[in-house]
Length: 544
Image 1 (cartoon, rainbow, N blue to C red):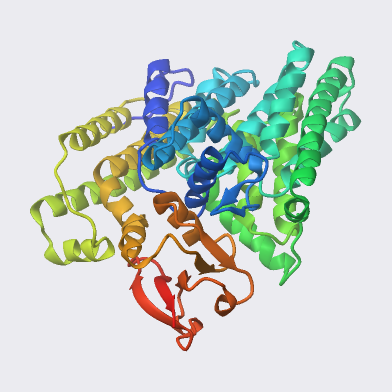
Image 2: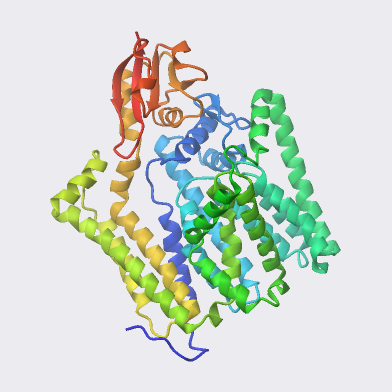
């Protein structure tokens, strides 16, 4: 039975070893190996494979076609490390990228802890880490391959550099440079613009930033970034001017006014934040209430409030996809939310604690129940439905997966049965709950889930109908099938920019949810397949 002590200074139960255990288990959960999943993973592994094979670093390619949707800097990090260790096997490429991504996530957590430990709150580094790994938004960005996690790491370097600009003005300038480079990896330039704007704004708002140390930090960071970014842009223009202008046009397109409705965008932003920054937003409200008169005394919190405000305003007014424009708000919300954990009222603590136990307990029971359903093939209807979604899945008992599932369940049960829970400990319980559900799902259900989402059987099934010695066309530009067929089978799909019928190739691989889009007067359908969860069907066509 959980109890809640009335003592305002109870013995703390958020031991450092608990933090280390939870963080390691959470981070290692991101390294589980599986096939490339949509939306970005097929392109990431395909581009990295192309860099390793074709040695084209300046211009990223998918199937020998330039790929400009993600900043080239993003792929350099993975490619350089894989090149160093001579990784070339297709399965090793994907798994190695996941390991590198896991190290990036760990770096975000460690840097966030360092920043948090220097905020005006008791042992705050621990609280920041627990809030961060509890957040739905952070989970969403960490458990998939995308540039977002590197952008978050960039903002961590950015904040860390500003936090230590007085003590280490030279080193902090280099840290700021690294942060700006990583922030620039974003799909478009809005985040780097926000970062520059805040650097200009801070000395105008507060005398704390009006000193030579801040000026030294800002000048070093911005100058180094400007030189490297300019040299890359100049070299890119010299090597491939067409790609450069396409890349530039896409990178500076920070506004999208097509079908723009500011009220709709505002409501959509609030709706996203209502779950995206759970549980931090409740604690942010409490912190603002408790520190309403002196919240700007902590200068890094001042920067975080500016960041959060600009992210929100840009998401509302840019007209672009809300999640892609607001996801870095995870960090400022986490830092602000951590400040008044120890002063949170006992009634709120009780409500949050029991709510987290109920939610994560129910999810855990569902995951365990589904696992035993596969074990005993009961109920038959549920098992059949799961197999319909994953026709290529074959259940095999694995003692190591079961052992990991039992271990994480026991850790969670230990965490939630501690007595005298207060604010700091309820955050630990929430973090342990998210870790429990994530790792339990990965341990027991990853093989099935991967079989649902993987494209590998589709690619392999099509190869008997494709002559790889002659050209193969596809419908569209930078398509998922272009990345997948190149990654798995070295089949280069040539894009049809205008019409598939005008292609010079006598065979094609296309993906469409409308078969009538294929002109069957021109093409014969020789093979087709689809994933049960996918709206699109994949076809191999032969010219009549």
